[in-house]
Length: 147
Image 1: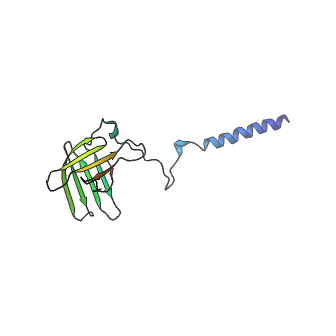
Image 2: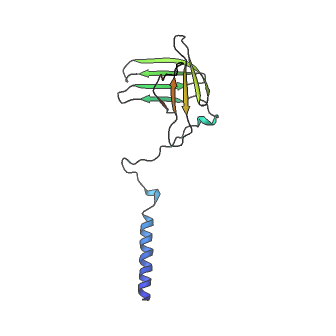
C-alpha cells in the first residue's frame, strides 16, 4: 500500500510537470491565421494633449481607390486617387481641431467647409474619422489613422 501511494504521488508530479512545461508563452509561435489584438500604439487624441500635427489618415478599397488626409502644423492635404497610375485629386485645407471635432476650411472658395468627428483612445482599434459637409451629408469614406 505504501509503494502504491509513492508511485501515485510521483506519477501526479511527473504528469503536472509535463502539462505545465507545455504552456510556456515564450516559446509559443503564432499559427497561420491566428488572431491577436492589434493594439493602437498611436497617441491618444481624446486626452487633449496631442494635436493632429503629422498624423495621416486613409481609406483604401480593393479596387485601388485611395483617400488620404495628411496634417501639417496649420494645414492638411486631402488626396483622392483612383489607382496607383490613375487620376489624382488634391485639395488643401486649413484646420481647427478641438477633440473630437476637426473643421477643415478649403483654400479655394468654391469648395465647402468639412467637419470631421474623430474617435480615439480605443486600445485595440485604430482611430477613425468621419466627415460631413455643411448640410450634414457624408463627404468621404470613414478614414483610419495610420500615423
